[in-house]
Image 1: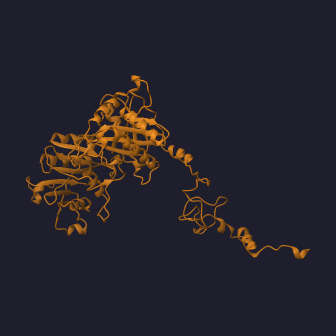
Image 2 (image 1 turned 180 degrees about the vertical axis):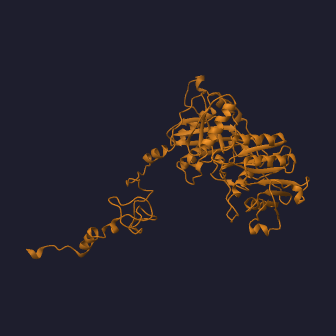
Image 3 (image 1 turned 90 degrees about the horizontal axis):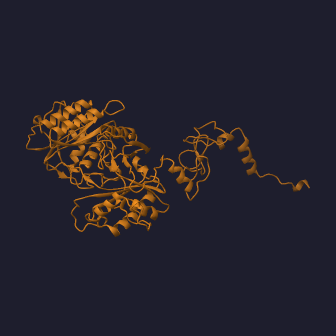
Amino acid sequence: DPSMMLLPSPLFLFSYLLATGPNADRATGSGGRGRGGNLTQRPKRGRGGGGRGRGAADGYGRSSGRSLGRKRYTREGTKKSNNSVDDLETRQEELSPLPPLTVPNGPRPFYFTCRHTYEHTLIDEINRYARRNGGEVHAMSPYPGLVRVEDNDGILPTFYDPVYALQSMPQSVVVTAESIKSISKQVINALLGVGSDDDDDDESKIDRISQQQHDRLRSAERGSLSIHCLVPGMCKAQTKPVMQHRSDKIGEEIAKMTKKMFPAARKAATEEDPSTRWLLQVMLQSPNIAVASLVECQKKGPGQNSYWPNYVHPLGLAKVDIVEKMPSSAYRKLMEGIECMKITPKPKLTTVVDLGACPGGWTSVMRRLGCYVVAVDRSELDPVLMRDDMVEFIKGDAFTFEPIMAGIDKEQDCWMISDVIAYPERCTELLQRWCEGRWASNMIVTMKFQGGEPDLDELDNAIQVVERLGYDCRVKHFFNNKNEVTFMVSEKDGNPLDLEVGSLGSTMFPVTL
């Protein structure tokens, strides 16, 4: 019966026309601000791609409805598995190659961290050191900001401190296990020779270094052990690096185990700082492979808490951001230098000479520390600093200035800081003049390089000049340095004021113990 025929609804007709009409690609194109495009054809309008915010965007760059979210879907459009096993394997491939496992009494690799993009510079520096000492090492970078060194001939000393290294993991072991607890046990066993499941007394399975470390850590002071749990993504200062949660759990398990066996892992009985510092570092290379290192840190000075490796800041990364507006971002380099030296000028008693001060980033830091600053430059500083009664601006040449020009005599405590742009040789001359004149008790100076490679020969020359004139000298390429390095120079018999831990910079990543 024709009267019984079903007529299509108006909504159905509208949807059909919208999908097949001349404006169809406007309605179905995935526009928005991102890259990519429609799965079947490129939209005629808009820039294509899943856009910002939620929803598959239309051809005009607008979002419409919920889209294939970046976090819940792969690039191919398939939904990610909740158990994340495949995801972990994919992320694991980012660190390549994965390290071979170490064996008792076998060679132990060194690991160093550096400012990412400077891995090859650090590798060149390490190879240069090995050649000068008549040996050879194999250095490579498995991940940005991380360098692995195989030193089968024992060329590198335990406390080798390269300029371009932010942190060191000397004489590391590499272990593997499935669970968090199993990895923790393997780390403790490999580093300290305890917790092994083997019942035999095969001496080949007893590592000599582990036994020595075990005996020394047994007698270490309470509160002297620190534990840093790391993952490769931290080397690039990532805020939420892959595997960090798993790494933290492993650290907590290791802390529990060590507290039962070693007083050094327990809270100190007094508020006095321990006279020695131990550092246990664990870095996951994959969910089931970990690199670990244990060492009694070497005091570097001039501050009482300046050690190598750095037991205060994981990976040697200090957070040195200032919330208030600063004249320039260069202030971070100075703060990293002070954090590394672990000393601070004496408020209201120390006069600081800032050479090449404009626009005033370094001067601002010293003013925040309560110092009177003599700022020398051909150009004026930030207007706020020019109005500061505790800042004396002298228009002149940074390389010809002498403290007597500002009425500073040798009886006053004087620091010199400089971030002036100059050739490396000029930086060496500047350091030489100030060291020969004994004009400052402490100096922080950047040496800038031309071109893509640092002048390591001139860097060595400057270090020798400073040390020959009776000063201690340490040089570092910090996270906020670019094509430059920072000299930290101090009197050998000085009496500096120690920087209280956490008073200037804070840790970028949490410390387990």
